[in-house]
Image (tube, rainbow, N blue to C red; front, side, top):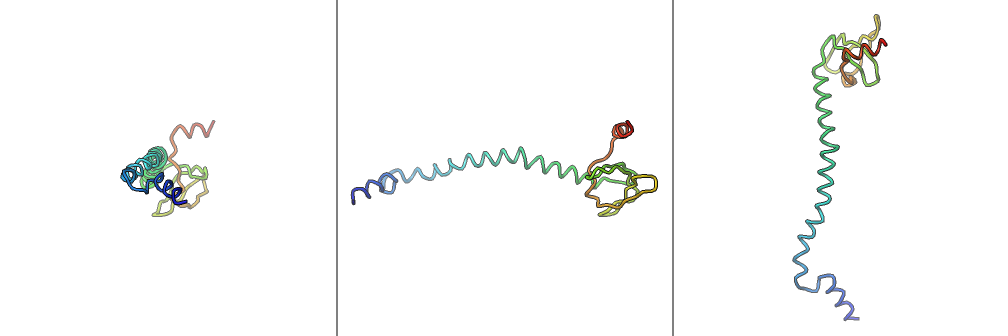
Length: 118
């Protein structure tokens, strides 16, 4: 029985000798795949999302009266009044709505107007 325990301890590297010194390098090498996965996720998912958020925030900061916009819900309108957190959109001749500033999705281009009429 004692011989069996001794052979198991030696096989695990706890029986003394040079095997204990190489455990640190093996631990670092086992982290490399996880670091590579994180780097890939950063460049493919995290960084583009951060850039998109910065662009959206720049768009919201640059909004001004008279801009033609599209909201996140798909409403097309022209900004008639703008506040710190809200804005008023004119969506028809006598129809205005008040909404949160964050709900502006994008500015309308002149090409969008042609598509709407067609």
